[in-house]
Image (cartoon, rainbow, N blue to C red; front, side):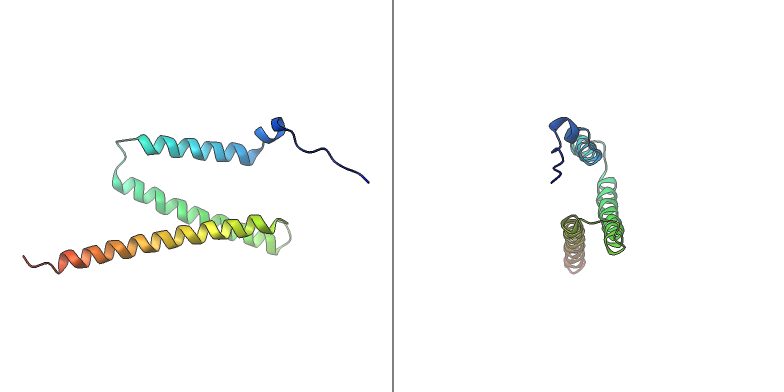
Length: 108
């Protein structure tokens, strides 16, 4: 029986996925405290991140179907993230439309 070595902490800290997650977290922290970012920019960034998550999910699903990706849990988690992002966006849109209709129906 051939047992391979488990990855060490040094190997994990240099992995590409971990570095990508650190960069995304750093960017999110920077964007959180910027005061000169407009509402339009924040909304645009949120919509772009949902679109990116959906594109990544579609690519990952396609890779799994073609046999390139073997980790089903990774695909399923990606699909759930994409689904939650879409549902949040849809609910926010519905709330904005509801508020707009309420304002338009107010007597002057």
